[in-house]
Image 1 (cartoon, rainbow, N blue to C red):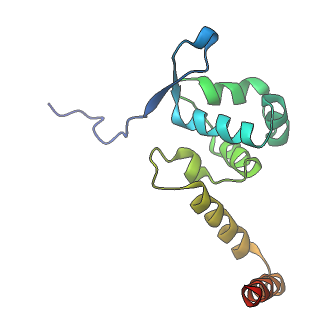
Image 2 (tube, helix red, strand yellow):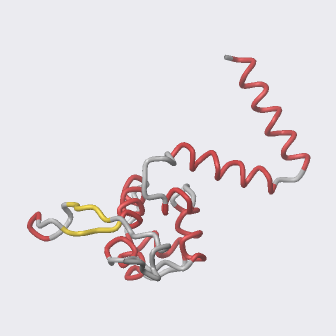
Length: 132
């Protein structure tokens, strides 16, 4: 049986224990990643919402609603505040590590730098290599 939706990638879910009285709650992977990074950074829902120009309820929905419906603009702001990339947040597998995401973010920032700033960054790295 051929479906007209066969090219649509299904959203993966996982079970977590963050519901009332320890009940298993079905949560989305994007939401789990946002929640984990937010808590690692010591940010409350209110604080992350404030930093991203979102509402507390919007952040809560991203963390808990199935499926989440993030806008690209808001997701970019959230990724920036959580010091990660959109790619890491949306990746459903383990192919993209948090370190790889941080590297990708650094390279994007580096490409935006002017020539003088890039030269300073390269000099710092060169000095660091000489010390090791």
